[in-house]
Image 1 (spheres, rainbow, N blue to C red):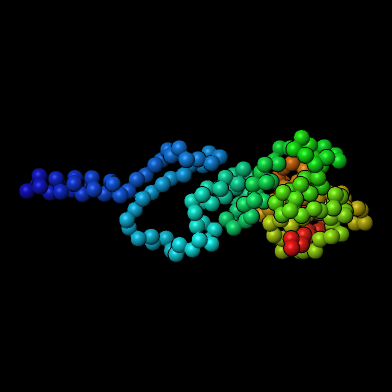
Image 2: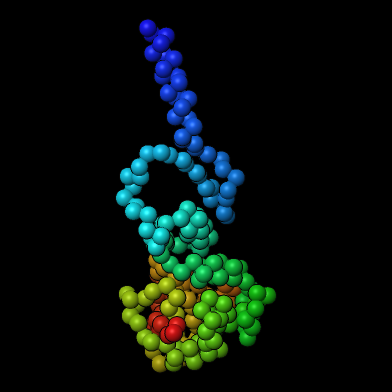
Amino acid sequence: MKNSILYCLAAASLALSFFFEYAPESSNTLGGASVVATASLLPDFSGDNGDENHPLATSSDSVAYSHYSQALGLKLTYNEDQNLLRTVADWIGTPYRYGSNSKSGTDCSGFVTRVFKEVYGITLQRSSRSMFEKVKRVGKDEMQSGDLVFFRRGPGQPIYHVGIYLQDGKFAHSATNGGVMISSLNQPYYHRNFYAAGRVDLN
């Protein structure tokens, strides 16, 4: 009797192994993030109704956002513009070069103009001051991914620097002391010199 029960349990275990597969070391990776595939005949109790517009609708989206989160040091909500994140990530590490806007070197406004052209197909003014004149002002607490952030060294001083706001208080820019990088608006230097945020009309 005991042997019969053991045989039944073994058979059930073998049958279930065909329906559940766990791949702890999958070869499917993106930027070092593993993709784990699980097959199941059981209903999904996660609460996801299968909406294709859900930010986590596909595993490829989830992996991509995870990759950008790590690459850019951002805490993402998984509904940001992936094209913007990908383009910024491609520019990270580009050295600073005054008056240029290429992958071999770029200044702050050159970087911003190239990103907006690549992501949105929009040609911005070449200088940070000219950009500021064309944007719609938004409050610091109303900033969204893709807004521009402007800096000046004090009241009455001209705008001297521009970057692209991403998320979580972070922005992308080309700095004279490091090229294209991600910085925080909470860093003392940028917190002190932050002047305003502006939104470009994408229509």
